[in-house]
Length: 326
Image (cartoon, rainbow, N blue to C red):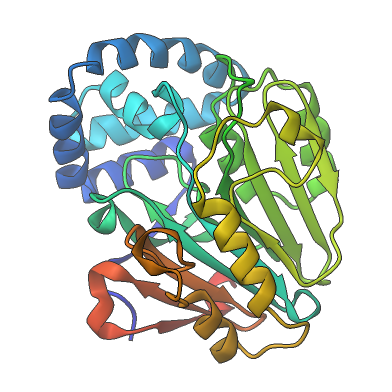
């Protein structure tokens, strides 16, 4: 049994994929835009988004084509949709959310997806195939995808954590970069491209491959840091590299989640014990590993992914065999 909010798409190119997704997610696109238009600074966000669009179209034209087709399929304004797709990169501040844990010699990756109070119904499970590439992911409506957790048919698992930096500028949107990494078959080649891109805000990108090799990438508009961390490894929303010199002020959530996950994680764990770790609520509703902002949880092991969605909490965690990618 899979979630009610599990969707599959098969497309011959990015535009075809976008159009199909726009048709399926029409209601979500229209609702998201209607909600966004009620904000007094929506016009300013659209103006800022246009500047990001120039960079995305220059470096990743296929992603702009995909979102244009998504807007067409949903019968919504493209710039409105593109502005939504940037999430908080068009805000004056970036929020902190999400916790990733990698253990068991790289055989297990766990991730709690945290967002805001209206995001429970904004996330679903998607499997999308574009020609020979298949991506299985936690997906936020009205985005390019790749900005949560993705398992791709090249044998890579990619998990994203938000980072908050004072080094902000208009550039290639971080969600375009996240989508690019979600499709990777060669992290080193992807890193070479990342290094020369004019980047906007940054992310922490955690990557594990089928050989249990692990990468952590932290980047902002000024610099890129790459480590091959020892395991077990935990990342939340504060920097673990030299980029912390540019870190914006954070609340206590990120460091508290990091401390708790680091305390509870073991070098060898089962999927069930790791799921229990990620479900910890011992520090209350605001700063626990599972907190009031947690909208999804995923445990990825070699043969399967276990996914819990808050919007379908009564179903518990459901198992998706990763043979779906073959």
